[in-house]
Image 1 (cartoon, rainbow, N blue to C red):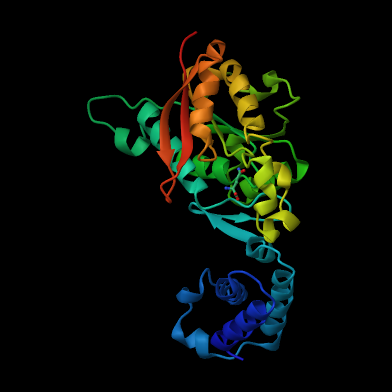
Image 2: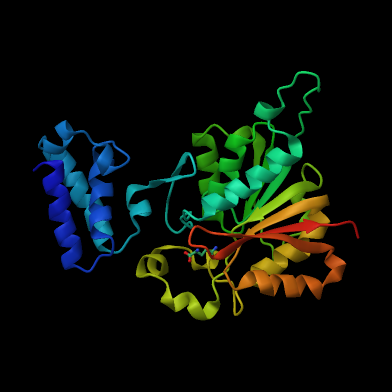
Length: 309
Ligand code: GLN
């Protein structure tokens, strides 16, 4: 069978078994086995050449996992985020495409604050090379931390997660991408850890997090792929979705430099709730300085700043 025939064969099997995104799933699996990122990047030649028996068996093996509702990212064992290809392994949270915008927001701020080397390579002014320190809370596969490191060549990142599986995967991804020298990866639980552990390089410029923020009551509406395979602790934010958000904000004043920033991905109901909560906690010296929308137009990202107490 050719690649085109295999895609339509497995699409049919997936559809018959009620597997969502049947076409995309079969395209990803067949292209992966042929060493391509997407089906559309396969040339006409490879589309019409019959696959070897071994390739067809590999496609069958991967498709069988997809038939058990395993997310395609885990089936392939790798996935692209931002400009990086990251290793994926259950149950570590799979980075979602909207989170790429969280990375862009942090990058914009870091480049503005510190001057990007590319913008700053200067004539009259001496180039000030600063070494911003960024803390990521709940690093999962390392997607956010490693994307930032890859674009900010003088920065250092502390990436923490409460799960050992996540810490290990971030470590593997950092090594794969040769970014291990500027990152500290720690197992840390915001509910019980002591904040001093987060300061190997002193107070940080920026905290970034895509915390668990799904309202507990909404958890049952999540897709079967998520419920059966992903660490639900990375999604369940408690009754108001804010359990971990509040912990991060309570921790932030001890960790941040004056005028430091917190960037959070949240549920669209959260920006208003967070603003109210911060107003009733003036001792934290934090305020929301911007709310950004995701690509569906929903308020999804918060920029919070520390002012001097
Ligand atoms: N956007 C995610 C989802 O619903 C939720 C991520 C999170 O809780 N951090 O899949």
